[in-house]
Image 1 (cartoon, one colour):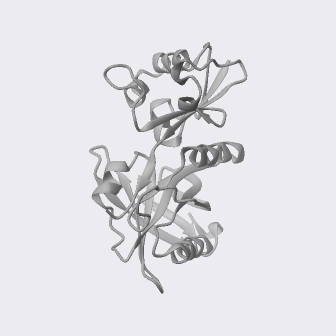
Image 2: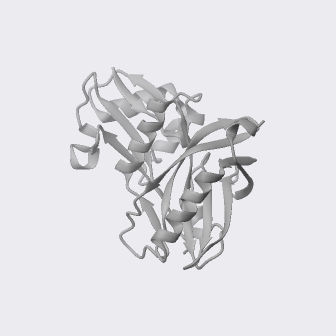
Length: 92
Length: 146
């Protein structure tokens, strides 16, 4: 089972669970499985067309899936997937 | 809402703001979230990875962020917030801060000049995505916190 690390700002949508295990063959299936388990999390991760939102990054291990095979990046049973919110700001 | 820091951690944050002046600094706040407030018991400086004007903007690289989340999991603590500086500007969230903010986190903002940290404030988003200021409590030892 692949393990998904939920960032603290999104844990209110996962009953405060910090990691979730899912059965999936690739990133897309992992996100879909997670969304089925926690429907309120789905709209935080996906836009109306089902695409991963721009301000959310998905990492497999230490690699951004954008430099791999995006949502079709295969995952293994020992995979660690991280959901990463964009963290930024500043005075202007 | 209240956020509690040991004095030495506030001093570390201040030093970071002065070191990076006139550029914005940023970093992570680790601790515990309780019903009656949150306690920060560790901070970690982050690299401002903003590609534009770092005097006005900060950004934390996603890989650095996820390593902070992993670190918190390993130590059974919680990433409770983010700190950053506003060089030569008030410690008030900007429109850009509001646009970029995520729920749950405490956003600690310090107003810093060349020679001193003028003010520090802390903010959290409410349900309507408005920033609400939270009280900062600074203590010498955590044992005194009730």
